Length: 184
Figure (cartoon, helix red, strand yellow):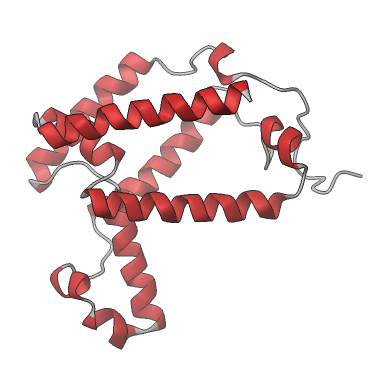
């Protein structure tokens, strides 16, 4: 019996580059541009996601240790709250589910075949590595003053030289990682 009987067991390996796009990337890109324009119009702030993670961390910190969280310089200037950035992240999660559902791409598997082939079927190591990787990415976004959406969408839209440099580095890093993943 499979370890998770309520999840469909998918065993075939699929190279993501060979699948047709479920949604038009041109339409999705145009809609992100329109969203970015509305974000500037309504909130007077650039579109970005990393600030939301800091807000959620502050909310969690306030629940666990409110005195300590209030003393942190960042949260004195930016009180933890559920703001539009947090709602954007929730919308991204809901939109990702909607895109996968309408595109027929929901597989119901915890582990992609590439992971199973390299590391086995244990779910917890993948969750741990995902958590550690996410924490490192969040730290990098805070140090860089923004994430891929902040620099890659809003910063380039404003013709920020630093954001264009960051965007080029994102593509180089992504291409190098994809090369390593699919060739070794």
